[in-house]
Image 1: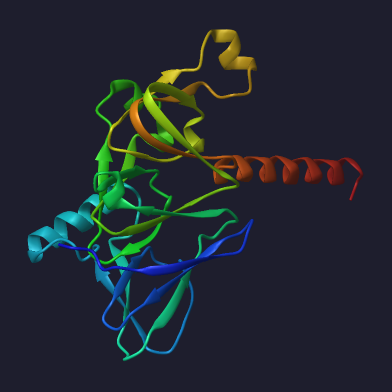
Image 2: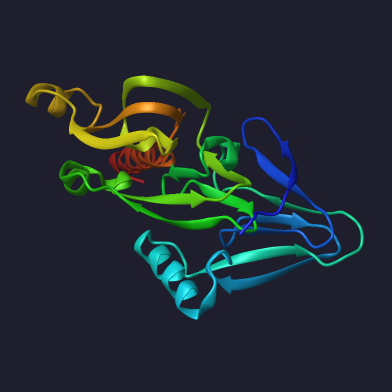
Length: 248
């Protein structure tokens, strides 16, 4: 089904949110808990799935696929039920960058990390993309089951830190699995060992790296939330040990 046409405004710099401008009758879908605020006239409803699938079986299949990614069965639909323009804003629960992506400009399909999706125009199908590579299955962790966004409208993904857009022309890009945000359907994705045993044990870059090959667009984040959480935990643990050593 054709996606609703949305206008938007990106707010902020280091901790961005996106404000969606809804004309009467327009709807935006979002993950639960991502809404910041909305103006009068916006009505929201929690529904099973993204609304792109038709029929009871289609909705159940769409919702079931979301369970595999660890997401909720339900998504929230925000609609402008008024007669004038209305606004609703979304942001992820940690600082970062909001990336608007026009799916029609990328072949109508986008693969992204399962926690990257923020919101999209109604009519966008939010599903999953299994990686068929054996290496990705055993070592992928964050990248084995990815989300797949399909449609012809706007989708918004969230990334930690700064977002770098890389254009591959029959090239290969290797990166930390957590740094991957999204890539277009012309890219082949796999997981490979980082290098020799010494590099894996003492290099500090992890045991595996994501390898992307082909022609298309890749979005990379400079500060994955998992990396930030690890540093916060390490600093907190160290501070607690110092307090205990001081006898307090």
